[in-house]
Length: 182
Image (cartoon, rainbow, N blue to C red; front, top):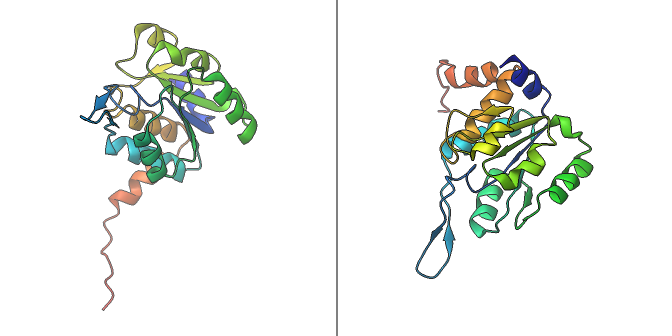
């Protein structure tokens, strides 16, 4: 675990797959064929915590979905690459755009299509219910499954490794009385 924390301490960019990582991987369609996705609010808060700590965020997804566009916009995530059957070009673009070395990147994935990027980053993360081959090549596996806390697990791991998590918790545990305007 010390090796994982050492890797997490240097992370400047976290890239997430969507289906199976930020969602549970289920594909839900209404009667008109419109796709719906379910995102976990705690995962969203974890992403906001990372942003607040100065960590860059991006999404690379093999599928395209208006629901992803809407959710990422709501979270303030601007680097969203959808419809990427080959995720390496988007990964390379992110490295160039942000001037970040691959060793300073974490990638969270769940299936074999994520391996080409996972094999190149400093911290490769598999969600708890990822494909066995993905878990075998990951540096760390989240305690929670995709879409049900895995992104939050990764967020807290990085923040802990960077010495920022306790400060965040302290803000929530502040018991000072609230001053009211009269």
